[in-house]
Image (cartoon, helix red, strand yellow):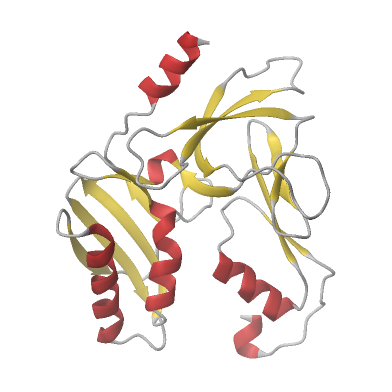
Length: 239
């Protein structure tokens, strides 16, 4: 709104974004429009803040508040994809031990130019329910499609990818002011390059993308069960 209308506004010193993963394009838009740096904070209702951006754009874990484990996702096509398992260090009344918050992330290499000694979380890849289980059993994090989709479809205002079965997807989109048929052709080409011939999809034009009860808008939704519980349970038993 501010970018498109050019209306005057108070320019903040910085912006902190939370609740949903902050994409590269979203960060760039916020910083260019507001003229200040945008920082991401990652957390959950159960634990509060788990990690926060430094000035170099790395999410540092908060070891005083929570202990975070990275449990590898079996069959993931993205190297290093893990499910986060968190232990609460501040809740004396009812601590949560090795709690699966149903989020996935890719851990980063240790060390950061900012000089802080806290471990780096890496890229948060969204909810486990946002991972797509393909017919061959491989798992693809839905958020990995986000930049590909946004960049090739400038005329699409909003989009949501829903996996109904391992081989069938529904692509809901809200046309923008500059929408043209070429946007869907570009999207169809990119999806074909990404998924190959193993899956099919349908496009559905909608007036808006419905928000969750939490107020969030989910970019990806999968209704296909995922073999993560057994992985975490087996590791818990081994420990």
